[in-house]
Length: 235
Length: 235
DNA sequence: TAGATTGTTAATCGATTAACAATC
DNA sequence: TAGATTGTTAATCGATTAACAATC
Image (cartoon, rainbow over all chains, first blue to last red; front, side, top):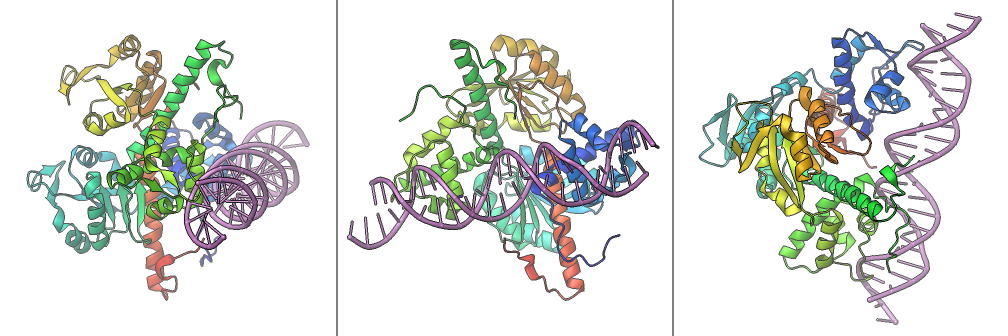
């Protein structure tokens, strides 16, 4: 059984971390359908993944299954939830009450995962004082003091790229420990601060390239003899 | 020099693909400041990356530099742009005219990268017929026919999770080749279709976990002797 | 017991980092 | 020529996949 004094951090691979919520959602679906137990091969089939990878992922967050049976859905859900920090209440502030910021403020589902945005900040006098989805918009200059006084650790940046670094600096000054950054900008923050970049343009670039390749390949195939039909490739 | 008949596809690593736009933006900044030439170590310094990785990335898209000098900024920008497909006009349709969809319709910058959303689709009678950022909202059931007639290859999904699979099916029926999916759902589409998932909850999960670890670690450190000050770890 | 599936170790694969000769 | 930086090959690192004994 577990040793109380952990000598070293568990060290979870980044790709695993990004897959865990997918399992969580899938297990909720199973629970909803009244399914109590599931095997890695079933998960792999439904989620188009290698079963061994699934097992490794679950193992890495210390979930235990029963040989010959599988994993208990009712254990998995709270297990993953706890690991991902869905229990504790994460209060957050959001900077940038534009269209994207406003859209995020309206995401009711965040609360399910312990995230609660308690205030929004903007530099436009037109927006300051407004209330968006029952969240008050304050002037951006009050951010550091607010964060510090309310002891808030999570900041969301939805300001334009030009303003992102300044806002990040204000967050750091306010004692923010983790930043969810939607601005297309490379933020410079102290090493201690966790930054999760959500740069749409990076994704668009990848998608754009792959689409171009796909269309280009098929044009080429069409012009010649079409031998590469489908472009299927076994790995 | 280049051989005209490429025997095999170049094969770009996924991580590289996701870094290319960052270089592109950085090089645009250099050009704006009148800098004509740049070395990988300078790039690495400014972007907090290993210089060798930068060189590998540029090499993988066949950019050539000059030993002892560096890379030409005026060659890099169109080079990366062409590779990422920023030239060709990518017409797209968007399904789901909610707050996120509307926010995306307002992104003027997409045009810089060759992306043009030409129509939006929704199932709500309240929204159909409206015009958002000069883009008309049509009924979702007209999507397949519209896509096929207009020969559109890119679809953006911003509908709720429950509707995502249905919309994806409609897009596939309409001849869409690539889907930019913002719905928190695992889409099932034919292998030929490129899907880029933009699931906020996956990212939130990773961020949430890392924040929890960070706060947890520091609490533990505070309660005992604080030896792990800063949690610095040399790789 | 037989069948299924986990837990765990080994093999493979791919990406990053290091080393160094070639070139400007 | 000396200094800097690329191009390219080798070493390392980490994640995924395969193999198989242990367990229900």
